Length: 422
Image 1 (tube, one colour):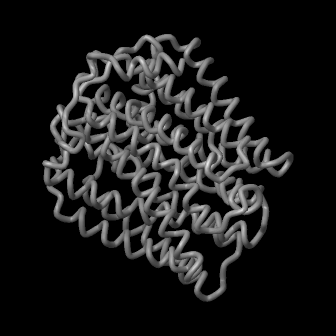
Image 2 (cartoon, one colour; image 1 turned 90 degrees about the horizontal axis):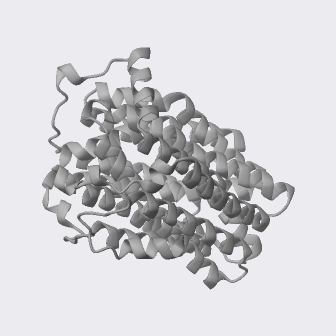
């Protein structure tokens, strides 16, 4: 499958264009700048919370519980967030979610500053943070096609994903130094300011308004309509399942503090580099993909990319070398990036504007549920056995899930993407 993935990437039908063509559009530039700042602060905050929790408890189970607490608000609110993205003014909803996230970050900062933190308080603020994300995720993704022409969709989705991965590189690198120099409270203060700066980039946006006859309503009918659309679209449904199972088994992010401190024997700065390595590989893969105007054999490339991700995850679990671990995390990041970009491009291309928010809301339940529940599973298994064994088992599970979906859902394997000419 790895050979097939490489051969697909060399397909002569993959037409090239500038990897930054979407940046010529003012609205998209502003949106992307704000998204990058927001994501950088959020990634820094995620590391700070994990580091603070592990310092307080030295427990892999507590790290795993962060995943469960993060997922519960997504479980109960993502559908509401999807309807909100299809019903409310998307610009105002973006601003509201960023202010909400900024207040949560400020709460974390003040609690840490006045030595009032506890595992219970961290869990409560994490839940508040992801309650906001349940609304931010659908509106962020659904708004991209409103900012750009359809011919730039693959490029815009690629750059959006690249911005997130660049934030994952820059954020952890800064976080490691700030934690070492000023403690985790500095991360929380930084994130609260970064989110308010993001609001300033959103305010000037001019976004195409919803047409009244296409708007959804806060009703059971609107929710069911979104679920039915995802279920009846074989390609979207199959990519959603693949997203969930691959990230559930392959997710090991919550265990990186354990690998850094106890296995690879590095400090907070080394932890930041480990987080950044994944995004380093992702950015290289994303730059290559963003320069393509048309990609053939979407389904096979997605399956091949997830398979590579699983193999690299197994290698990371077995590694005891810091340098080798960085390389394997970079390979995992590259595989994940290719899969994410193509999945998101397919979903946006095949979804009508009036259903876009609800489609993202339903997908967010699986996309966020996979890694968050996977973090919990990895933490519990690590506590029962060891962190390396947990990661290796997750990688094997990813390979098994990919092969199963490839066989059970042949429509994805055979999908060439003719409907997604962008």
